Length: 260
Image 1 (cartoon, helix red, strand yellow):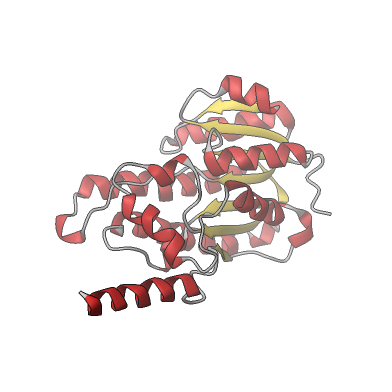
Image 2 (cartoon, rainbow, N blue to C red):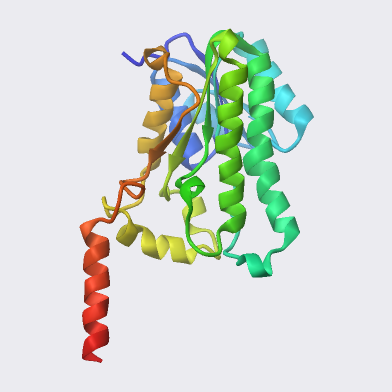
């Protein structure tokens, strides 16, 4: 079950964090994988047992070259994971800098758009495309407007693509994780999220990259051939409601305020 034996997969943002966890899992499941990243990860790719193509997902010609090279190496694509993404420091809308919004949109949204466009072009009928959105697409903390907007766009692009590529039986989905324990979670300027994730999440912890990679694996496999157009949350219960840890924190804060 959930075998990727004989599948050809491309993973963008594959050099670290969730992308790297996904590459490792796919290789272990039997797929021929092409790792893509802005950084030179050639040595890492050799260590993991996959191919590597250095790629800036905001450059259309580079994304097409990535998909074309993957086909030249292993044959037509079965799976594309559009995972490359960035975050920016907290910034209130009242202080919005247009260039910051544009930068996040180019990488997080247009990078996914290009991955879908050229991934599907070099993909077998019946393939699977999975994009990394975020639980931020359901709203998030104050100051995350640029990131929220870019990830909402990923959800929208996913749903549009699912309809357009359905005649070819290509499934298009996205995952919406909360904070994943990767280097991006510790980026300068994003301290608020890191401090609050254990309080606001009913499971009281960050998502592990391997856990989100497992969801990619499921959606990439033929076993879930009837799932398309979905934004699937993997957020430790944040979307469902308030965990005891959050209630306890609030009650303790209220009690402390009364005593002061």
